[in-house]
Image (cartoon, rainbow, N blue to C red):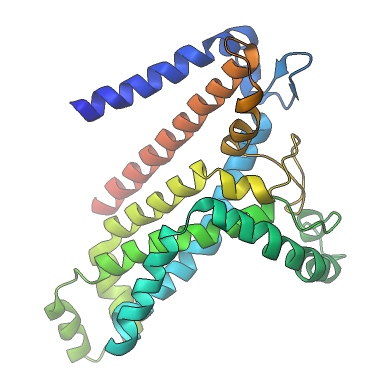
Length: 287
């Protein structure tokens, strides 16, 4: 009951705080790309776009790596190596996000600007669609770099969850599969994954939740530009980074503060939708 009351209080406080903005702009607040505090014109399209794109890209990069780590630790790694690597993965999850942000700004951004982005732009030049998706000046910052940092942050959570659930598979199931001649990968694909599918999906959703709400690490490297870029190397914004940057400059009772609270409410709705989709997927899997 306390959890439900607390959750309801958060929803109501965000909705009440953002109501002046929702009343002033209506549905246009969600679809507008304008963010002009001087003219008091606000729109949520840019941070919503940045939040969704960076989170999806982060998952696309993180989930295969996390699965590979969990597969190695549970099925392939020798016992002497398994514990140190598992501990190192868990320590990555304990690193504060601002450390990831500083590391991204001082190490990853210069590396991306000097080596990675120019090489990708030159390689994909002339390729339909891809040349537009990976275009622009190689500044190093941008949506792709933010997604890369988020992927590094998400990997420990997803990998640790997958490793733990893979270890819950009864040994007799795997031994039976090995007994009929299955390879290690066939045991993983046909025995371990079906047995733990629900928990694996839950771990991925946990990583997605971390990516959706991440603030400081993204703020350092995304470029903090209030525009929707047509390419992944362009700068952008997320809901969390925009709130972090603008909240300290917002006066109490102002329309700007109300807009930031409305953004928080939208982020809550996005998280709820993601959770609902995951529950539907799990229901289909069980059926």
